[in-house]
Every structure is written in C-alpha cells, then in structure tokens.
Image (cartoon, helix red, strand yellow):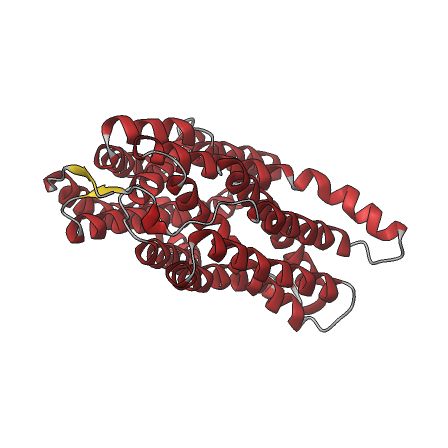
Length: 372
C-alpha cells in the first residue's frame, strides 16, 4: 500500500505548489499586491480545518476512506480555482484554496497511513518516505507551470488558468491513486508509542509545534533580510533551496534513526539543532546559509520524531491542525519581530520557547512498547 500513499501525497503537494504560486499573482493583479497573501492564508486555514475533519472521518470510517474524502474535497477546490482564473467571481479562488487546503491535510496525514501498512519496526521509515516523496511533487511542479500557460493560451483560455488546470489534474490524479490505498482502520495496524502516554504525547506534540514556530519565524524573515542587504533574488533562491533540502532530503535517514534509536533521541537532536540554528542565523556571514540547512533538518527531526510518538488518529489530526494554526500566527508575527531587532530577536524568542521544552524532554523517561 506504500506506493499509492506516497504517489497521492506527492501529487497533492504538486497541486498545492502550483495553485499557491499563481493565486498570489492573480489576486495581486485583481485586488492589489497588499492582498496577494490572502489565498495562501485560506489554504493554511483549510489545512488546519481539514486536519481536524480527517481525524473525525478516520474514526468513523477508516484512514483510507478519510484520505479519499480529503482528496475529493481538494478536487472540488481545484475546480473552483480554475473557474476563478477563467473569469468567474474572485471569491471562488478563496473557496478553492480553502478546499485545496483540506486536500493538503490529507497529503500531510497520509504519512500515518504509510505507517499502518508496515511492521512496527519500519513505521518511522514509512512515514519519512511519504515526507520525502511529497517533496518531489512540490519541487517538480514549478517546471511545468510555464508550459501549462502556453497550453491554456493555445485553446483560448487565459494563460493564468494553465497552472490551475495543472493543479486540478494533479489533485484528481492524487484521488485516483488514493483509491488503491488499502482500507484499514487505524486500530487494525500495530502501533508503537510511548508507554507514558499522556505526558509523552504532549511533549511530542510540543516538539512538533515548537519546531514549526522556530522554522517559520526565521524563514519568513529571510526574504526581508536579503532585500535589505540588496542580495537579489538569485541569492534568495539559493538560500531557500538549501533550506528546503534540509527539510526533506534526509527524511529517509531520519526514519532510520527513529527506528534504530527511538523517537526521543531524534526529537532531542531536533531541539538542539533548532537552538544551534537560531544562534547561527544571527551571524550573517558564511555561516548564514548553512544555518538554514541546519534549521530545515532540525525541523525534520522534530516533525518526524514527534509524529512517531502519536498513538491515535484523533491526536494526529489535532496536532497537525495546531501546527498549521501556529504557522499562520508565526508568519504574521515574524516580520514585526524582525523589524524590532532582526535575527537576534527571533533567536531570543526561539530560545525562550525551545529551551524549556528541551529540558522537559531530557528529563523524560520513556520506554517504547508495542501496543498492538
């Protein structure tokens, strides 16, 4: 079952990448640059809401069926964005991005479906494979955007509809791939989680949320930093690419480490990596770009290490929803904090929230048990 899970997740990420990029352009042209971020905000909110809904659908139906419903909602969203790009009321774009966000939550939560499909000893590696595969979809989609514009123009449609049509085709393909996911209830598969349950799960969720806050806060400020230093888009592109590699390229290694050494060790490494990156990013010399790679990989360790300790679909969906909610808040707060004192202020905030959590995880005493 792993192949359709990975394929569906990668296709959904490709759809989200295409729609997110051109929706900002469409709104900038129609409503002005000041409002260009609103469609992506709708996508973030849709992801947060979708994560909660998928948890409920998983409990009532099955994980596979919940994922199919999520991708189906995403198809409806893709259709709305195409209509908006073709000349329908622009409100359809916001509706479409909201619904695509629900599909995006299915892609993100599908890592747990991959974990259900394998033996307990391979759960973390299965989850990391989905995260790694999703990156391929998100990275490959931009290369098709220009050809899609030409194709749309050739059939008499506005050129900007091309990437939205591409997104619709991708999310529909994700839905088709999801039909091959084996129908199982989450309780049917062996689960490995921390015996200390409540406290361990709370700490795992905290690690995932803090990792997201630190990463988003810093990376939201990076474009502002490069602009103020007149570095140009080429330099910014390199920085973002290096960071993205850190986030996803080593996911298989993270999965192996979780299965080999346990999630607690990996989350500790992730938190220490966050602290190191937050300090290094204040140095704007040669260490700056490598620190962005470290930041990305520290996030990866926190995200996958925390995921491996969640033991139910309800918890998984609530944590995912929390992650995307704080992403919106961190994105809004980061530029304001950066204007107060640059990266040192962001580093101080990061240390303030990450150090206490690191101490708590260090004091944690957990033995992994097979709950299956």
